[in-house]
Amino acid sequence: MEIKQFIEENIENMKADLAKLVSYNSMNSNDELPFGSNNRKVLDEALKLMEEKGLKTNNVDYYCGFGETGKGDKLIGILAHLDIVPAGDGWNSNPFEMIEKDGFLYGRGVSDDKGAAIASMYALKYLIDESYDFKKKVRLILGCNEETGSRCIAYYVSKYGHIDYGFTPDGSFPGIYAEKGMVGASIIGHTNKIIDIEGGQASNVVMKKVDVKLANDSFDIDKFKKYLDSKDIEYEININDNIQIIVYGVAAHASMPDMGINALQYCFEALYHSDFNDPFIDWFHKYFSLDVHGETLGYESLKDDISNTSINLGVVKKENDDVIISLDMRFPVKAKTEDVVKLLDVSNEYGEIKIRNTVDPLYFDINSPMIKALKKAYEDVTNDKQTPMEAIGGGTYAKAINNCIAFGCEFIGENNHIHDANESLKIENFKKQVELYVQAIKNLNEIED
Image (cartoon, rainbow, N blue to C red; front, side, top):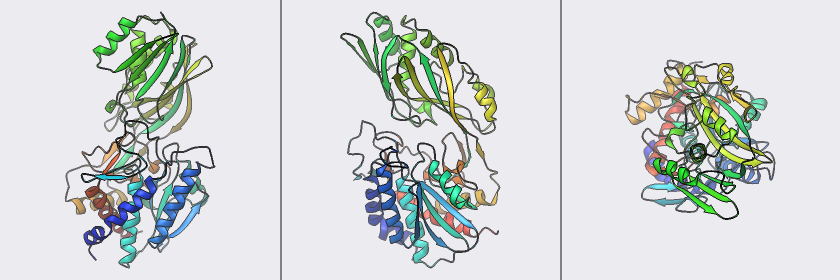
């Protein structure tokens, strides 16, 4: 059977299977180890779906699971994830009840990354149904902790080792040959002038809303309003026993903070320009201000011909007398991690930065056999020979396992509102993913060992 006919005959089944996965609010939680009860349930569901399609499955202690087919000593890996970021607000429908409208599917995870998991399952089902001659084993690995650290794949590697060739359908086509390095850190502000503060959904999402309580007469409200009005930033101010300020931004992925509006940064900058007179806010203005590329910290000096630095402040809360802010940094693929960390050494008695973790950059030669095989799969299916592979700021499973790059699932020019409200997946592109993954598997299978 031709692949296009197979897809048309199975598209309704694909939608139904995706709706099952979307129905689980599989955000990481601590209610049941390792990553929460909903992640256990969605993994059970995914393993069942893979079994139905002819794959031999294995539950890796609920860190992840996989379905396998093929034969041989070499292993092709496909790595997708079942966990999600928080749904947040602003949805036009229930984020955990997938709906179809005007040729699109809507729901949390339809694009990141449950849709790609389903498309990968059907790509393997097609090859199995066609009795394809596998020269290598193929393993679809579904993790439960990509959004908050990829410990799922680290655990998998500790038990099963690395793969020989592979891709993670958690980026964009025609593929990503380089990924920026990453730094996770906490900004700690020592201040007693901010009574309370809360905002943000996740460290890797641009803060969409921040709610702050301040003492009456602690700043010039007219100057505060004037500053935000001049920047076209939405806000609310309520005055009772204290002053409550709510500042609204626009969510975006942390790898592209310039595509969003960070509510916290604009709130703090407005306070700085409104006679708030807080040494922590002065420190914050000096080193962060409204920057999204680390300009005032000196990161322009590390920019290379492929990539630059991006900085996102994702979550803020008050703990005792301290303001705690999550910092998510993506740094250039040719930069050294130690040089990046050195530029964050700006702590003083009012503000400090504590490093939580670092991840080195990922870089592949675009002329290597694996990269060429994946690029050719894209070109043969789409007839697009002009679009180049990318270097990105996002972090994928490719950093957690050897011999892997991101390949799909977004197409160039799309905005599927990943990590935002009304996440979507175009049905025609859902179909196209299956075709692309089938060809990618075939091309990797034919690489001479």
